[in-house]
Image (cartoon, rainbow, N blue to C red; front, top):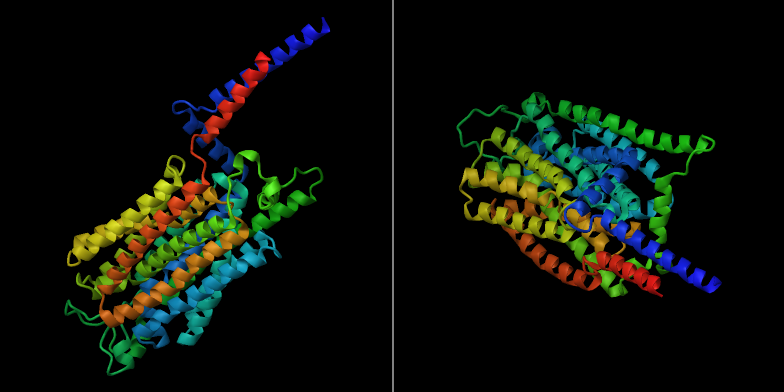
Length: 514
């Protein structure tokens, strides 16, 4: 009698377990559009749980974008201010980019010694101070030192912000990475717009050397604003632009202080709940140990596969961050000096258009990241950039095509970095050290490509600007296809999640029968 009762109880328990699995499967919305709704609800819940940190990271990246984009449109005025011919001014791109590289490399080690909040406070504060110090630089060496200091802290906050997002959101990081990088685009868009009213836009190279012809000859027969170097220095008002940009970055510094203050307040309050972000960070770092991974996440990998994915992802970031830095820095020069011969004022707005479309592309990517896979988004990004550059190269004498190509390049280039980082997180576990290496690869591209483009621009002519871009795009297609093929060996099919639930349900039904 007791045996029959126990069998009936176990049968009821099996049925109950089966019903729970079935209801949870249906509740998750496997069929129809329910899965999409569940995904969006999860993203909203995650954002609301970590809203303070996420919003802070967004504005930190806004400051980062501001510091990246101001050099291109202000290059001529900075040349007049420092008494430097235009070809030599390309080295200030190298100065900033090299120390971005150094800062991103050091950030991975610094995160082991200092808290993320402290590094963000120091980084944003130093970026603001160095931006406000640029008006004091009347020599190229002083400007190079200030930009080097700025670049180092730009590199550290780049790594820290990306690591923070991955630590908090894990596999669900894609739309949140797109969000913080959207604010990078906003800062990069507003920076040239702030500088435009204060620009003199005159190449002072002829004032410095009798053998130097103007790098931007005047094709409209307009009278040049200044007749001597001293007059040009007096007429330029570019110092006000840097002070305004520094003032807009002050609230970001205050916001990072609130992040640190909130953390300490939670610790001081008795009975305060544990910091969930710290907990998620510890869980994230503990995943590096094989024993801590769940069975469903275990995919047979060897070290060679992990290294290949990391290197290929770093190559893609190297190519596109380099292309982004080169295009943003030299589109103004190409528009004025190249076959289309834009007026200087129009070329400055073309630079702003690129960063505006860059920001719009990242805003669009936030929504697309919740609906499309990272591999498909990255493929569209690469092909869009290739088509845009190809059109500009083939129809290089067309004003309209330069504008259309700039828009295409801004939109499709915008989300390459966060999408490649999200794709790497899907293929392998991206640790803080891995993130530092990926940001390091991107920083190498930002450092080297503007120098290469500047050298070829002066040696081979403006068209080399587009030719180099096409070469980078073709190499990126090869790198992407290799990464995708390697990823197929690491990823389980997309249906595995449902299959696992289905197999659990079948097991429960089998247990119910017995």
